[in-house]
Image: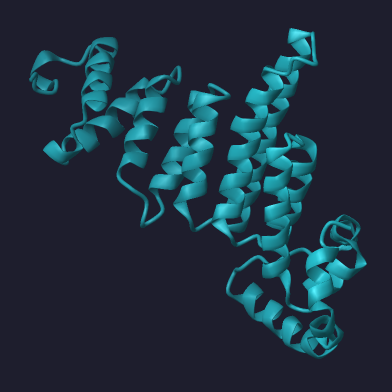
Length: 252
């Protein structure tokens, strides 16, 4: 198994892992009470990392095991072994579901690097099959972000990345607007998340009025929020919605 090189060095520590099980069980209970998601240590994970790796995970070594597997995933990336890389990322995120960078980078590699490689795959003469493979990698990236959000609902970053993915790769502006709004609702989210929501909403048929209301509320916050893209979006919406000239934003 791919983790054996690391785990061999840990073996003596793992032998004493049984003593940690009561502590791990108590920690899991406390984490659940705090609404934290821990690694799902089930038979599927055992099959992926092997018995020795599973023992390491049970004994409290999830973090170093995940770090080692992450390195293996980057080796797979360098060798353009996209399927293997996806499986490794899946295992890493299962072991460390509260690590935002793991989810974010796994999604990026799938939706951007692997998808580009699939589209440019010279070994596949069929353009239709290349496009199909590309879209499958888009979906894998989306899946990583959505699962990451379920495990980390209190962090804006994964919402933002999902919004960007829906906007740029799926061209689903309605869904992107909703996700950017979710990001903006999180207390430490940057102000641009609301602007992004307005931009995408403006491209969503039937939501132009909602987009204008949101965009105008941002505009009314002052000069710091009046980005050129916001001004362009608002002026286009004013024409589309036939906003009275006296109520329109000031021209510059």
